[in-house]
Length: 429
Image (tube, rainbow, N blue to C red; front, top):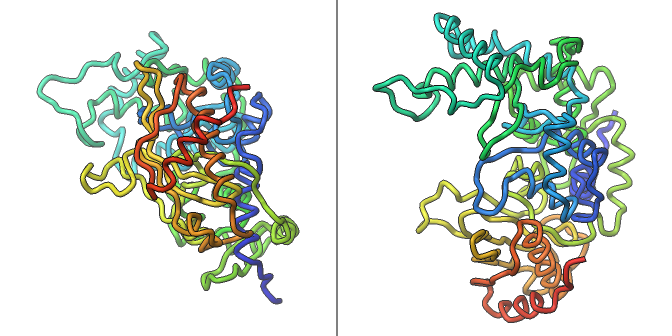
């Protein structure tokens, strides 16, 4: 049988749709739309960097625009619609998928024994930490003292309680009850999600299949390295990944596809082949402008973005300042489904100012050319500038800033038009 072939445009368009970027910053934020997005994306990544706003909130703003940030905490930590666990890395996940999470949690003791030989002789101490959580919950890492003469650092230099808390969380014995100044506060799983104990775990052999099916649904179509880099925890080694793909193909759930310009095989859900055909015909698969968080699920595998859009993006947080190209916490700028540049923001909370320290527009946009990667036509530069200005004002309002300050713009000829667009941007709704 011949392998169905699709354009790069089809793969990119369906990816935008599956990541809820068809109409950025336009969805209504509520319980249904929140859990639908988190479930569709396979997780909402959590990160501690706070130069602008917490990563998960920026990712949500990119889809929903401005919403009451307290509403997220109520839905996640009071109504327990979401649970802090891991998929790509630490993420909020949909609690409706408890059978899957329970199966992964149940596999953790063996994984820890194999990789770390843990708990092993530390089991009595782990039991003490678990008992302390049960007695004093909600309780975080700061509630346990570090033994004298030890120093902090990586896995093997964590204080003993940190090891125990990590193990108990990943094994599903404890869960994140809430956060205080972003510190995880734990409580027994039976208190956080009482129904977890009665939840029948997914069969262990079905977990790899479910992971790949969900990842393919989240991306629309994907190469093997996309699948390996999207849902990364716990690690699925390439041989297992390929065996699982072959089994899913044999069962008629997954189909190999060819994507224009790519030699390696791609895969899609068999049920998604009509969606790829429709996506290839969409005139403009995304309408509007937004800024993406560095930890957005759309960017979990940056090589995928480079392959489809020819947009090279990396996080430069860990790059020495003098070696950074675009800035510290750079947000890709997306307009009409295209990456049109990068923006390095900083929120000055005490002054109520959102500073756009560096704004860089892509050369092809400035020159009035079509994008170098996937393309659905040239973009209007003035409309793109207005979109970026409006996005900045929206982000400022969302983060509590009263005004936007503009720094360096590349090319410099666009600084005046962007400053003018910022002055003329419509007021808050």
